[in-house]
Amino acid sequence: MANYVTQTSDRKKSTAMKLCCLGFLGLGGIHQFYVGNIGKGLVYIFTLGWFYVGTIADLIKIALGSFRDNVGAPLRE
Image (spheres, rainbow, N blue to C red):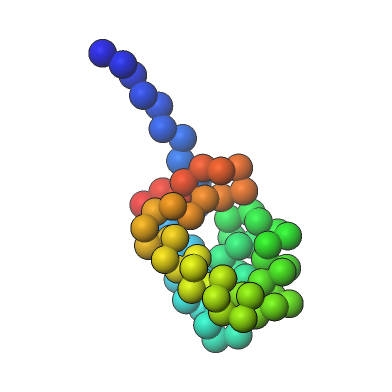
């Protein structure tokens, strides 16, 4: 039998989702800072989450489980 080791982030998916939803209130990019993507977080703040298109895409990615942290690990449940 093969032994698989899955690396997951120490960041929670539910927290990232809440922070991303908070971005709709004018605080875009907070979820990017949470997962360690400082550069993306700054871009999101200055462009309002790429005019909310990027924020909506991130909401979908977080919900589907394909959103990753700054080292490429998936968020944990």
